[in-house]
Amino acid sequence: MKPPQFDYHAPGSIEEAVTLLGSYGGDAKVLAGGQSLIPVLNFRLARPGVLIDINRIGALSFIREADGGVAIGATTRQRMIEGSDIVGRRAPLLADATRLIGHLPIRTRGTIGGSLSHADPAAEDPAVVTALDATMVALSKRGERRVPASGFFRSLLTTALEPDELLVRIEFPPTPAGTGTAFVEISRRHGDFALAGVAAQVTLAGDRASEVRLAACGAGPGPIRLAAAEKIVRDGGASAASIEAAAAAAAAGVEPTSDVHASAAYRRDLVRAMTRRALERAVARAAGGTR
Amino acid sequence: MTAPRKITLTINGTVRSAEAEPRMLLADFIRETLGLTGTHVGCEHGVCGACTIIVNGEAQRSCLAFAVQADGATITTIEGLAASDRMHPLQKLFHECHALQCGFCTPGMLAAALDLVGSHDRLTTEEIRTGMSAVICRCTGYDGIMRAVTAYADQLGKLAPAKG
Ligand SMILES: Cc1cc2nc3c(=O)[nH]c(=O)nc-3n(C[C@@H](O)[C@H](O)[C@H](O)COP(=O)(O)OP(=O)(O)OC[C@H]3O[C@@H](n4cnc5c(N)ncnc54)[C@H](O)[C@@H]3O)c2cc1C
Ligand code: FES
Ligand code: FES
Image (cartoon, rainbow over all chains, first blue to last red; front, side, top):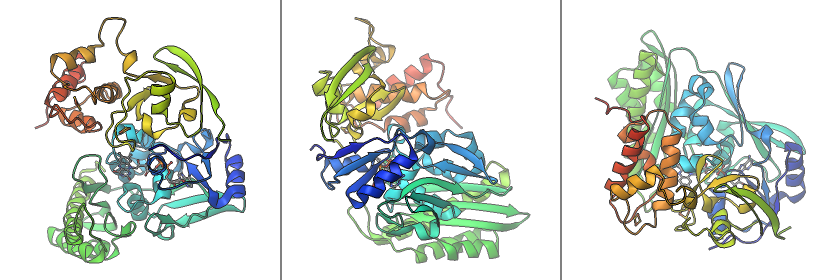
């Protein structure tokens, strides 16, 4: 199949893009890396009247240290994120997760902003921003809006972005010293979307776990923060028993569904196993100082 | 504005210009407009990898980009690998290692492998296996492909010793 006809705009600036979005609204789609949107067009599952290609806007592609954390432009390619020293140091969980997205030729084009705006329930990036409490910054003719991850993902493939809003950057908070991270997932073949996955970030202070962040993908209509499991490790430390209890709490707290790829029960069991593995790996990295 | 636009790009060292409607996929532009049919099209949704080409030095799916987006780009397809009648070293290794049967996946395999090896200083066989899963082969069982790409990494001094 071939894509349906559309009007095509490739603005050179953020202002131009936002003006175009403001005038077309719901009839326009933003084209970022195209790794999710173009398959949809090729199969004619959507027929937007207008495509606004944001790939020529240089100001949307950057990785910058900011306020002790890192700010990443919406069209920054996943390939650039995976190889970035700044991301490796400032947001190591994002670096871990990005390597698991599709294949290298997909990450050549795919962008972090596209992944977050698309909000596939099995995608890695939404789970990472959820675990880390990152902030999505959206821009429209009406001005700038900062949306915390906890309020960004609304339901299946649906975010808080309005039709006239452009996601412009994502801000990640600082990673404390003594932190280890891990993103662990199961997929049938490398590069496929995960059946389920868990993002973990643990900060150790002596024998206490002073900060614990956990989120799951593939286990509900969107990314799920595993708050009960976090609390168990924060209160009970990083012992094997406490990790096992956290894994059980994580499995109890998700809402997986059954589809052709896996049953809900299997996905729930995966969340338990992935939570345990992710916590073990993150704790080992925190203790070893390797992040 | 669905009217055709003029696209100028450098493909396999030659500057080419042609018109394309915005909805024309880069893969179709290369095959049908430029007549370079070595780039194959399988699934048209990014999964099979047959259409993988090298754009500005990096492998990507040509079925998941529009031709208009490649205006000004530098592209290498399978036709650009051999120097006159001398095969590229990786092509030669594919030949020697029996890394192809029907050949449908081969243009994509070569593009993915060149980028994988080219963009890394060191690669373990495990990383090569993961990287080459970017393209699906229905014939070979991947064994010959793994041998060819591993030998290529080794030729360039990039093969890391197996861990543990
Ligand atoms: C074979 C294959 C395997 C894949 N495997 C994985 C995987 O394992 N994990 C994973 O997470 N993803 C996977 N993906 C998808 C991933 O590569 C894409 O990064 C992501 O889903 C979309 O990013 P994009 O930049 O390509 O966005 P696009 O496809 O360009 O856009 C996606 C959607 O977001 C909107 N949008 C994009 N940017 C903005 C913006 N700045 N502001 C507002 N709206 C915007 C678009 O209008 C569109 O609706 C895979 C894709 C393929 C083809
Ligand atoms: S045809 Fe492009 S990946 Fe299959
Ligand atoms: S050689 Fe036939 S698909 Fe790979």
